[in-house]
Length: 458
Image (tube, rainbow, N blue to C red; front, side, top):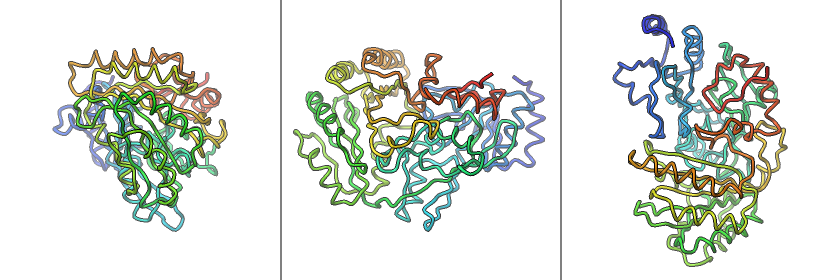
């Protein structure tokens, strides 16, 4: 850690050209700026560089190198693991970088890294266009895309990273590059799944697709007593879905936080409304629903329909892996675990992979998980810090109880901050060694290591 006088001198020199804000612990805005979405994370950077553009990012990287400060990079969204901030180092904060330009004719968008998906969708949907974004619209575009990008459109259009055309970024040595299939193609390969390991991405260029503005979406929920039947029905339904139809399942609590347990299916059909109505009909007819909101709605509303369940500042602890299979034993174990959930905000979620996302080669991008199946997310969320131990223990115990059903494959965006050493390897499997080689080329000193870290190959 650098001394206070050196830091103050360097900040004073930088202020004359820095377009954004440089915040220290004594500044009035510091406490709000250091907070991230997950209230369980409480770190105090020595300096927060709130950047306005790529020149600010380059200056912040250079400042960190000069002062030998560790660096964390914050986009616009969640970062549940807390890797977007740091104690005693420099947070490069991109959350105020909100620019976006939509080229409706070319069906592309250039978006700065501080945007969330609701902000992105608001602009693209003016033209009836969209790309795969987060399941929750308050998710930031940057972290989601760099680590993968599950979303409502992935069956039809692949992951967020599959729709990436180019990025502009700052490397660890301060160089500014554009990466695409034509420029720095090896780096572009690594950025599509490799997270924040290779530089600070300032902007993303995406391919857009005609979507909506009205699609078929919504949630249908049943009493928890129906969980066995509903989850087995979900397994049958997801065995043969059209690309346009995404169906996720969850053991959830009633949105009024009464603690009432439910089982739910959440859907989005991004094709014509008549096709969406036909696809959703068997789901709407199944069982006796306690709540059914499935019908035509704006795509922006579908992308935001779960937002209220994830308020900023709530305390979060997640565990996740892909399932080897959703067999009867797994369903029983999920029901047993959820029955013990101590928080009225806790969930067990099943996110289904099919369609376009599974038709990309394992080695075509750094993200390797290209088979049909399910990602299981044990999501513990609560509001009162006195419940920390019980809620964290439930997530860990549930994950352990479900271990016989889990594969060895992990989703990097869902990795927590207390994972075993091989968790990152499990997130990349056959692509990990190539990622290490590229890390050694573009960041040999592992300057960007406050992330789900890929160590340079020595």
